[in-house]
Amino acid sequence: MGNVKRKQVRAENGAMGSLHGLLAKYPDERSCERRLIEVRWPEGWSCPACGNDRCSPVADRNRAWQCTRCSRHLSVTAGTCTRASKVPLTKWFHAIWLCARSKRGVSAMELAAQVGVSENAARRMLVGVRGAMARPGCLRRSVG
Ligand SMILES: [Zn+2]
Image (cartoon, rainbow, N blue to C red; front, side, top):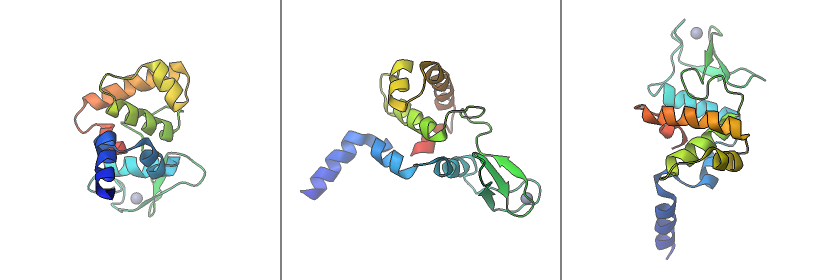
């Protein structure tokens, strides 16, 4: 009985999992940043200046991480559709999740209401997410 229920839930949620699961897995900016680092550097991050393989978040500065040896900064959002956006990464992840799940597409109005951003912000996010999803190695993996 328990197995059947679990299978049904998995079928309903598909490969992307549930929204509840997403929010539990990425509850804050730092957890999203960690995931972006994993996706951008699948073999593990390595400092281009000193070769060190450890970095840590800069206190009180979102999206800023630095090498633990030489303090060189790295931008976890550079090269992604979230760069230069003031929208929190948690909302970006929510938007990517919605777009990846939707078979018929997501409108800016729908995204704005679901994620909690303005319609203008939602429009910009959709352009970014659609562009990213069209590329190989896309951000769809970010929220997996
Ligand atoms: Zn370094």
